[in-house]
Image (cartoon, rainbow over all chains, first blue to last red; front, side):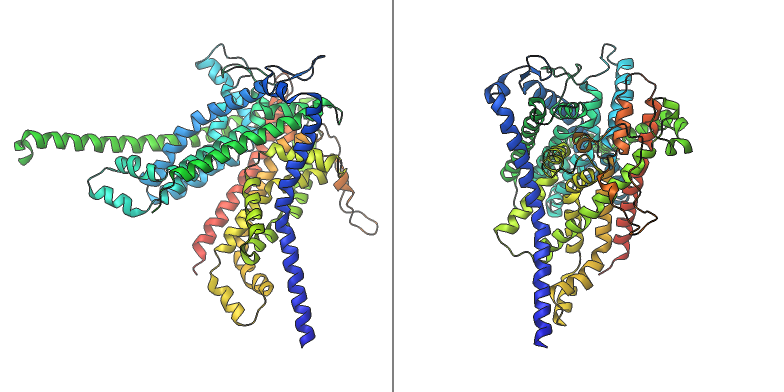
Length: 298
Length: 311
C-alpha cells in the first residue's frame, strides 16, 4: 500500500517535471532567438561599424565596395507599414465600432468568422494579388506612371490583411466597456453614434491602441507581400509609388541567393533581423505604455 | 398638429434630433461598407485567382513535378513536401504546446518563473515569422547541423505555431468548470488523474480547434522556410516512410530536402515573364483552398462546441 503510494507520488512528480520542461521550451526558444540574432550580429559588427550601420544612407551589400546602412531598409519597412496602417486603422476601427455598437447579434456572429478568414489567407497569395492584380488596377485607373514594383500596392494589401487583427481586438475592448456607461448615455438622450464615439471609444481606447500596435507589428514583420510586389532594391524614399526593399524582403533576397555561411552578406541578415526585432519590440512596448496611460478603471 | 404649432426653439431641437438620427444611420451604413470592403477584397482575390488558375488545375498538375515548361509543371513535390513538413510540425508542436498549457493552467505556482514563461509565450506570439527563419538558419541548420531538411522545416514551423497552440489550449482548459476538478479531487484523484481523465477530455474540442488553426497558419507560411533556404526546384519526393523490409518504417525522409506549396507558388510568381503566372495561380488556389478548409473547419467546430456544451 505505502509502496504503491510512493510509486504514484513519484510518477506524479515525474509528470509535473515533464510538463514544466514543455513550458520552459517557450523561454528556451526566446533565448535561442536572442542568442542567434545577437551572436551573429556581433560577427557582422566586427566588420561593419555600428555607426555606419545606423547612419549610412546606402545599402549595397553585393557591390564591390559594400555599404551597410540600414536606413533605406528601415524606411521601406516603415513606409509599407504606414500605407498598411492608413488602410487598416480607418477600416478596422469603423468595422469594430459597427460590429460592437450597431450590428445585430446575428450579423456579428456571421460576419466575424468571415473577416477572420482575411488573416488566414497565405501571405504568398496576397503577394500574387498585390503584384498581378492591385498594381495593374492602380496603373489603369489611378496612377498610370506607377512602376510594376512599388510600395503602394503591397502596403494596401497588407492593410486589408491586418484588418481582422485591428478590428477584432478593438471590438473585444469595446464590448468590455460596461453596459451601464452606455445606458447612462442613452438615458441622457444620446444617439448610438454619440454613445459609440464619446463613451465607448474613449473607454476602450487602451484596447484600441493595443490593437493598432499589434496590427503595426504584423505589418512591419510581413515578408512575402513586400518581397514579391515591392521590388527588392533598397531605396531611401518616402514616396510609396516608388519601388523599395524592406528589412524582411532583404532577408528573403539573401536567403534565395547562395551566400556562403559566415560571409558578411550572410551575417548582415541577422543584423537586419535584430533591427526588425527591435522595431517590433518598440511598438509592443509603446502599446503597453499607452494601455497603462489610458487605462480606465471601472 | 402640435408639431406645426411648436414654438421656434423646440423646432430647432427637433431639427437637431433629426440630424443626429440621420448621422446615426449614415454611420451604420459606413460601418457596414467598411466591413464590406474587407470581404469584397477577399472575394475579388478568390475570383482573380480562380480566373488565372482554374484552367491549369487538373489531375496532371497535382501529379507532376515542377518543370521548365509551364504546361508540364505540377505541384507533386510541393504538396507531398507540405504534408511531410506538417507531420513534423504537428508531432512537435501539439504535444509540446498542450503540455505547456496544462502546466500553466493546472500546475504552475504563482512565482517569477511562471511569470517569465507567460511573458515569453506572449512575446513569441508577436515575433515576426521571418525571425523564426533566422533562428532556424543560425541554430537548426548550422549549430545542430540538421541541414535544409524536412525535419528543420517542420521544427521551424512548430516553434512558430507553438504560442498559438498554447494560448488556445489554455483557453479550452480554463473553460472547464472548477467544480469538475474539485469533484475528482474529492474522490482522491491525483492532479494528473484529474487532468488526464477529466479536464483534458472536456477540453479536447477546444484544443482541436486551436490545433487546426495553428496548422492552417503553418501550411501557408513561406518566409521562415525561404530563409532556411528550402530548395525551390525539387523534382523528387522525400523517401517513403513505409518500406517492404523490416522494420517497415523509415525515417530517412526527415533528412531529405523539400519544397512546400507556398514556396513553389513564390518560385513561380518570381519568374520573369507571364509564362508561369497560371501555374502560380493554380498552386495558390490549392493552397488557399487548404487553408480556408482548415480555418472553416475550425470555425465550424468552435460553433458546434459552443452550442452543445451546457455546463
